[in-house]
Image (cartoon, rainbow, N blue to C red; front, side, top):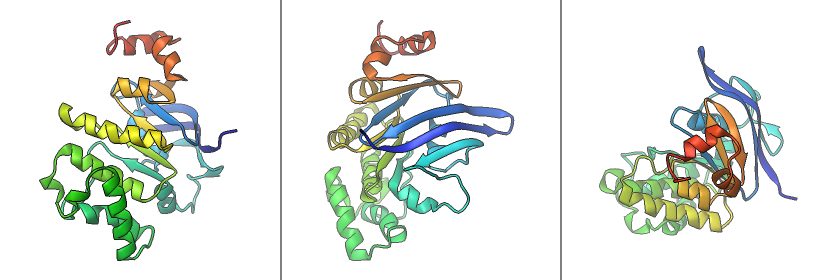
Amino acid sequence: MSEQILSIQHLSKSFGANVVLRDIDFSVQKGDVTSIIGASGSGKSTLLRCINLLETPTAGQILFHGDDITKRGYNVPAYRAKVGMVFQSFNLFNNMTVLDNCMAGLKKVMHQDRDTAEQTAKRYLDKVGMLPYIHAKPRQISGGQKQRVAIARALAMEPEVLLFDEPTSALDPQMVGEVLDVMKTLVKEGLTMLVVTHEMAFARDVSSRTVFMKDGIIWEEGAPKQIFGQPERAETKEFLSRFFDR
């Protein structure tokens, strides 16, 4: 039986009178690669930000190994080390080198000494092909390279789950492939991933599970073969028809 890492239960999020997420329920098992698809404004990114507590849910629970992370006193920094996040806008520190960007969390959150943090950071930068650029500042490298550094930074914390918020949407088309290749390697290595994406081929061919969101609601979820091949909801069919000839 697979191990459940995350359980999202009756999660809702409102900004004033604007309800962005409505009664979201789903779980993440160890080794899952779950792609969350849907039109812009459907609540996908807000869902990820709630799971990482960058937004506070209005209602519901988020359980990590059975513990509710939304309860008062929960150790959020330790949780974020285990449930990492890669943003579409990279979120690198522009005044730091590539190496120092990757070491920051290791020193501050994991309390590694500089030598240990440097060894760890270099190992993961090498993994994503960015070791030759450790002394560069973010302004000196391409968007695809920045995103690979951001992935290395998240991986260096050795998370149980990695959340990706549209990791290729800020990239030029020719740079998308290099980031997707890194993600595909992580899939093969068994990393548990939750990916908000507009890359439908990735969601169809690489994911183990697909979730379709519309208007802040999960309309349909299942294996990619079912969602892309035989979707049950008319809304899912209409959305996918924009990407594939049906």
